[in-house]
Length: 247
Image (cartoon, rainbow, N blue to C red; front, side):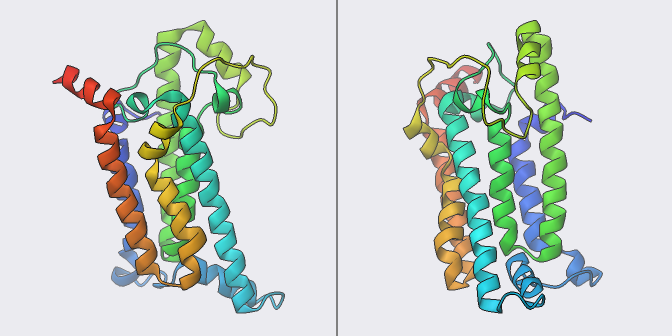
């Protein structure tokens, strides 16, 4: 059930492939399953048919929901990356020299994967409804496999201290309070923001541009921020140093 080392190395490409599949939704044209109507519009129509919302109000509710999901993605991704460091976040190999129990890692073990899930959930609102369903099922399964793979790796490498951490901190659903002591680790907010431009772009596009009802513009902004984030990640000092050593 857990992900292999190859899956971990290719995790970004696999995530992108799942998202592309959701937007493409080839089963609509090939088998006639579903329609080319976005989840946002489908949800707005479903809410308006209850008679409790006008279509305009239902659309606003759907946009606000997507924006909240995108905001959660930004919080967990940037917060987690600020304490973990870009060289670890981007590394193609599983890494773990010590137990990280700082800031978000005191409340949930996988803030980065949780943030990614929220980010893709927000993006799914501009996918065809069936594409959104397929995407969320596939990304949930894949992230769960990655989590199990990391847990097995870190348990074998770090031993009992990490197993104690597993018992103290939930895997996915964050706790409101933590029994773990506060860490003295210092966050690197600027680096985290630069390497996590994609969720920031998704939030901006969802919260501000969705009101224009222009899906092409929304997608264009997301693609631009994704491309810039790749450049920023490649230029990070720690990432360049790791690449040079690997070469």
